[in-house]
Length: 91
Image (cartoon, rainbow, N blue to C red; front, top):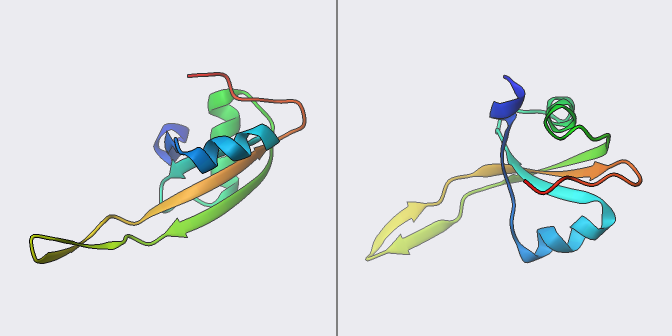
């Protein structure tokens, strides 16, 4: 996998912005990616040093629409901690 297929998008939520003050950024990543691959991809794309990567596998929720059950898609989130004094540039 190349670096552009590993990082899908950045998570934009209230909780993701609250941890940003501590040098942590949240991304939705490819489900097959592991921690070293995510670390290399973030370092290559944003030109920053990565200190730690935490991964959360999120199972899709079951929803009912007009009496028909369905499931939202599952996804993997990565919480990336940058090295001291580094931030991501606004995209």
